[in-house]
Length: 140
Image (tube, rainbow, N blue to C red):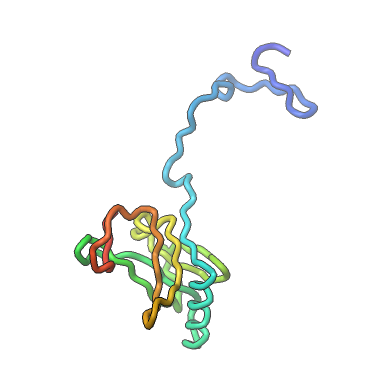
């Protein structure tokens, strides 16, 4: 076999020179998978609440501009999916995210915690650079 040939299984294949040169890969943002996840506790809480409500197909998760640091999370139960929603599924719960919010919350894990008399969602967002003292808003 001469230059340009490589043995693949049982066949000798001639690869064009453009495919033989290996170099650093360049990924575009659309090539990188995005994800939102829930802990098992958060998923159970959402499931129980949807059951108690008697309707709903999942949880909408997004951000809004507000607060000391610039952005705050918003959560609401979903009865209908939006046409441009990104849908993630974690522990059997569908999480709906609008495309504008996704870059700010990509990689976030939602947990549900009880601390004393208080209970609520906790957000583990790897994109957060700073949070305000009251814990209501964050900055990317």
